[in-house]
Image (cartoon, rainbow, N blue to C red; front, side, top):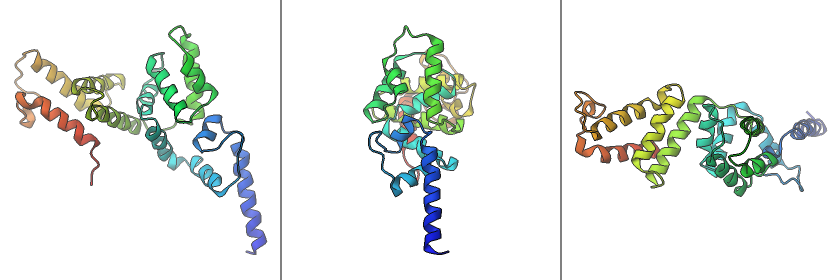
Length: 231
């Protein structure tokens, strides 16, 4: 193909993506590193658009947001399990998103809501935010990222081992007994029984040869292994 024809195809392809870009929300523009006041048509912008509109690479987009704002893993879990009611953690997430540059009118509005907000209006606002984020991730991956987030909080000392375990045990219930959280549910129940002085013929720990005196130590190691990259 002659050079002129190649240039024409490139121009047509670029125009197609720019046309699609005009329909992209403020959030997406922010996500692609584009300033509202100064949008430049560069090869980098074109490549970012290819990535964004490519479904197989949505995982990378999800991870990009989580790396920037780790609490996003918790928010994605709440949304996936339909726990869309006002709580301070939604506000905290919105503040952190804004601090990292993900400032849209919807996220700004979320950062300003309080407990007096109408539940239906709050749910509608959350739906608009996740609509602009094109939220379409497999539940299993959302749950996996939430487990890593909680485990990371335990390892960093932001949560105690007991707090982290309770969160992931409750996640088993909230996710309609999803197997991703089953071990945490079994561990937490047996651990509570042991702490209450109950004599168990069989437990999660005894089946693995873990003595009651070493449960705390084993649990911390369990969380550490979750966040340790596998070779």
